[in-house]
Image (tube, rainbow, N blue to C red; front, side, top):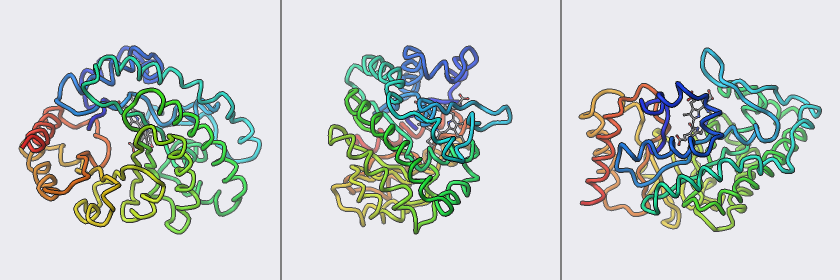
Length: 320
Ligand code: 1CP
């Protein structure tokens, strides 16, 4: 809910004049979009305006938007020849425009609010790279893992190396925390999740080198909290299907939990948004190590005033 994006009319107005790539790659514009939600709402933090797919793009695999919605990668990684087209050395440096946007956004925040950086998890990025964009048809990546484990691991090594370089850059950029998005974790069979995803995430946590806390969002894997926490992250962020108080009880207090209001509860009216927010807060009353968040991103059709009702409710609760 700290994100900008299509639910905000001021984002859509900028987007009418600039492509997504122009917004993301022009530090002044990216910083402006980053700060848009904070101009409207009394939020505690901002998240830098960018995308997880900037990493494959920097490796030589760009993405575009399909007219009917969704993402289209320029090519699919199906063979060693495709893999050879991806560069590692110098790739993360191509993302220095994000670091410049972070610098400008931090100046705008004047130290009063936190700023988050983020990076996709290698499994989720590879999902887009292998199946060309329609990440819901993720069977392609699981199939690669099962049919050509060597190619799968070579791909993961390359993607992880760039993610680690990028995390190092983010950790030194002055962001207050880094969130890793393993959005397509839920499509990874549980028996291979450790080998296919978490081991690579562990490298990224290492690359942050303890400079900033790392938060892991692994959609659909909240029940596997022990394995998520074992990556060394400071916080586990869960989707809205997880029972948050139960998770808080099970995790050691050295690891924070973040979550997990169902974004759909913001689709009706402000009273409904307030009620849903209050009931999540009540379920977490008296528990330490909790960061309120949504259980996933905001759909574009969310009425902005309902986000306002949520922020007011959380602010009143944390001041009480
Ligand atoms: O038309 C537009 O303006 C593009 C819509 C859009 C936006 C607003 C995309 C394309 N990316 C973003 C920004 C973005 N991406 C943010 C917010 C930053 C901010 O507002 O300050 C974040 C955190 C992301 C990260 C991201 N991109 C994720 C992980 C988070 C999650 O939702 O689980 C994922 C999966 C993506 C891929 C992506 N980028 C864009 C789209 C439409 C998609 C989904 C593609 C698909 O799988 O269909």
